[in-house]
Length: 294
Image 1 (tube, rainbow, N blue to C red):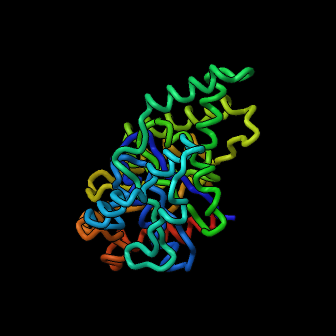
Image 2 (image 1 turned 30 degrees about the horizontal axis):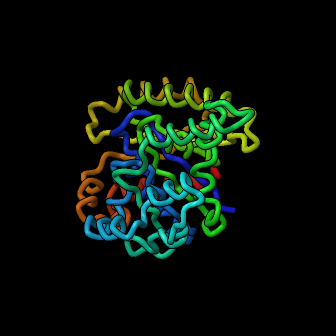
Image 3 (image 1 turned 90 degrees about the vertical axis):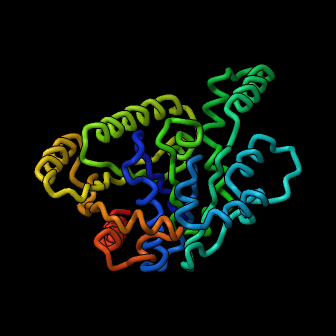
């Protein structure tokens, strides 16, 4: 059975998507693992890091994105043409074993979801709205992935930097979560908010028969290329070390590398586009540390 890994931080701009796609690529290309990247962010950054806009337009036109599968979950009695294996794009970025479940700019209508679940609560004899919502939230992503979870060694969920339905459901579906972070105060606030919210989620779902077991695999620091801040970064990292056990902080740190940004123009992860750079080498090292942790 494959392990599901969520990458998440409540603050954007911390390198979450870059970490997701390059870690997944390293695992597939250099360690011969079967890896699926699932884009749960409406910014579709993970999707456009692995396929071109033209290919994404075709995928979306053919209803091969995560939004189709969410709609299928919301309307289980409707006759849908595709199953999840049909919607997966194989061997993205030319890497055998690296697959993608594309995101979408419109994944679901939250008002429509709320209305549907409210109607279910009114029809139910024992459940109130929060029970119905928690059940749907806890099962949505887990049920979508269930038919193919055994086909992969790792499924990496690139979650949105917001506490929306898909982010919460993705965390609940995962075995582990990784927190990418910059050694800056606002990034640390995002980490603290996430930890508090996950604690609240555990409490809300403690009666769920599919109790959330997701655990923190580790914090990954993404640094700036400006060496004048190195001492300050070390001070901030030391503050984080006071809140987390040593084994919960990855030793590998990802340097800011302009080649990472340039690789986005080629819709290819930097470890494929320019494997000799400092950023690429750091991601390769991180993949080895990741495998040791899991």
